[in-house]
Every structure is written in C-alpha cells, then in structure tokens.
Length: 418
Image (cartoon, rainbow, N blue to C red; front, side):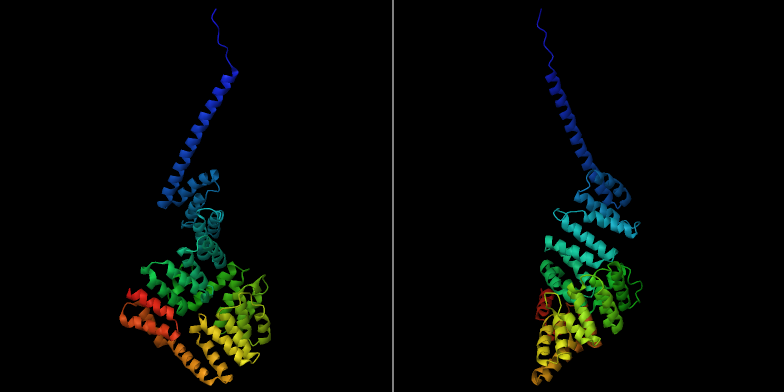
C-alpha cells in the first residue's frame, strides 16, 4: 500500500499568509492608484474653476489624508477663489486649512503667504498677515512675493517709514526689467501714498467711488483694521496718527488712551512713537517724557530721534542736545523729506549760537519744502510716469538730489539708461 502524504497545518498557514499578503499588496497598489487618480481629478477641477466639485473631491481625500499639505493648499484655493462663498466664515475656513500646514513642510512658505493674503485683503487683519509674512521670510528670506505683500501692509497701517529695507531688498531680488516699476512704487509709497494704495483700497472695499477723497477711504480702512484686530496696538496707533495728522489732536489723544488699556502696547515701538508724538502736540510734555523713557528697544529711527529732539527743545530747553537729536532724525528716512524737522533743527542751532550752520539748514529745509508745493509735485508726477524722456529723468534726479538721496539718483540712472 503506497504511502499517503500527510497534510500539514503549517503549510496551510503559509498559504493563507501568502494569500493575505498578496491581497494586501493588491489593495495598497489599488488604493495608491485611486488616490493619485482622485488627486489628479481634483487638480483638473481647480484648473477649470469648478470650485464646488473640487471641494467635494478634496473632502474625501482630506478625510483619508488630513495632514497632506498639498491637499490643504488645494482646499484653501477651492474655498478662497469661489465667488459664491462670500461669508467671513468661508475665508476663516480657508485660513484654517492653510494654518494646518507645518512650517517644516515644503509648502510652508506658500501656505504662509496665501494665509497672509487672505487675512489682510479679506479679513482686514494686517497684523496677523504681517506675522505670517515674517514667518515666510524666516523660511525664505528671498521670497519676492512675501516682501511685495509686506510692503503695502506697512504702508496701509501708517508705517511707511519702515518700508525702505523692503524696497532695497526687492531691488536686489527683482530683474532689471522691473527696476523702474520698483522705483516708481517707492516714490508713490513715500511721496504720494494715495496713488500707491488706491487700488488696494478699492479691492478691499474701502474706496467705493472714484470721487471719494483718499483721506476718507484711508479713515475707513484704519477703522476697519482696528475693529478686526482690537487687541493689536498697531490699529490703535495708526488710527490715532490719522486724527493727529488731520488736526484733531483731542480725538487722537482719546484713541491712544483706549489703546493703552490693552496689553503689551508699551512694548510696541510704533504705538509708543504715536503716543509720545500725540502727548507732545497736546502740550503734555512731562508725560511725553515719561513715555519716551520706556521706548522699547531698539531706540532708533526717525520717529525716536525726532521725539527726543522735541523733548530736549521744548521741555528741557537744551538746544544743543536738541540739535544733535534732530541731526540724527533728518539723516534717517523719512528725515530727508521732513522739512518741519529740518526747520526745528535750524532753530535749535540758532538758539545754540551756531548761526552759520543754522542758516544753511534753514535754506535746505526751504528747498525741501518747495518740493512738496503743487508746481513741483506736478512736475515730478509727470516725470515719474514717463521717466525715459531725458527731461523727465533730469527732473527725477533733481528731486532726489535736493533730498540728498544719492542712492535714488544712482538707481534711477541705472534703471532708465541701461
């Protein structure tokens, strides 16, 4: 009788394991294929602006892969670019998808910039946008997009005096073909801010008519910024500064006092600079001096030295020290264009018996003041529009020579004559 092979349970186990492994491999390969196909489909829907269908596809994908940074970028885009989603909650939802992308992800810089754009342009939260852009620039200091968005945020929150480093960096990063555009933006940003920000004010809903004065739309903008970020010192300072510039020093005083009720205002150099300036103009020199003493570091910049000069001049009556402070103030932008500060400098030099120097500074201050009178402004605006015409270029160069801005003279020559 022939031997009958004995059936081994161990063999059955191996066969079962092998079968399970094969089935698992097939499932993995199949799911990977499905995910790639679904992702490609979602991408095509975004390209075709089928926002609702894209969101439905992305909902499934994000349920399976909730931390996938590319899917989060895509979902944020599908929400933010859908004109049928106009509620604030929709924009907030888009920012939440972007905010969930780690700074360690390859998509981090793009995510930070996109969220900053949404917070600034749609939610009217410039400080939140600024912080996101600073994070992006920490990850990529050469991001043209981050620098380009940070510039108007500073401009539109009353801090255009902080823009110069951004202007210089963009000059380095942008191509030669863009140099005239950058220089033109720098001129309007600092000399005619209405021209620089009007387009954004319209886009953000602050300017509703072409006949609406710039100052009115600027006020609406600053009120909105403070309402959307009530716990940020920047909004209070910017609005107080607007009223101070408008001649309503009492309202400016009330706003900075309201701002002082929130935390950390005295750690914010912009808020302290506006507070000290308002107190000086209100005649509260002793209190201004006390606030000046807590100016957060770094203790520098045009606003700092200008305030120091005014306190030395009007409170301490130390005209020599005041002249020294003013000399530092006018050397830092926007000091070269601040003819009022230059006249104060000249007055303190005269009171300190430096009459010859005083006369020279006074003459220069008058020349700078003349640059901002209607006839000169008309000439320079016409020249900026068509700088390649030789007479227009010469007008631009003369303007900056009077301001003592040798760099701008050099930059314009290179940009136009290349």
